[in-house]
Length: 123
Image (cartoon, rainbow, N blue to C red; front, side, top):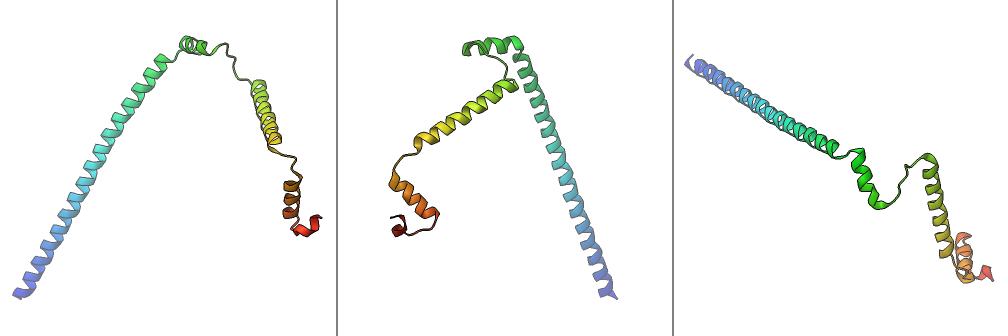
C-alpha cells in the first residue's frame, strides 16, 4: 500500500514538473514573440521615416535640377521605347553579321557537322 502511494505521489510530481516546464516554454515563446513584435515596430517606424525623408528630398524641381547635368531629357513614351528596342535589335544583328566570316572551310565544316556527313562527302 505504501509503494502504491509513493508511486502515485511520484507520478503526480513528475506530471506537475512537466506541466511547469510546458508553461515556462509557453511563456518564453510569448516573450520572444513580444520582442520580435517590438523590433518589427521599430523597423516599421524607421522604414516610414526613411520613406518620408526620401519623399521630401525627391521633388519634381529637384529631379529637374539633377537631370539637368545629363542634358535635355524627354519622357520615355511608347514610341521612344519602341525606337530604342528596334535600335538595339539592329545593332545586335549588325554585330552578329560582323562576326561571321567568309571562311569556306569553316562553313563546309559546319555543314558537314550539321548533316552528319563524313569529311569525304564534302569533296
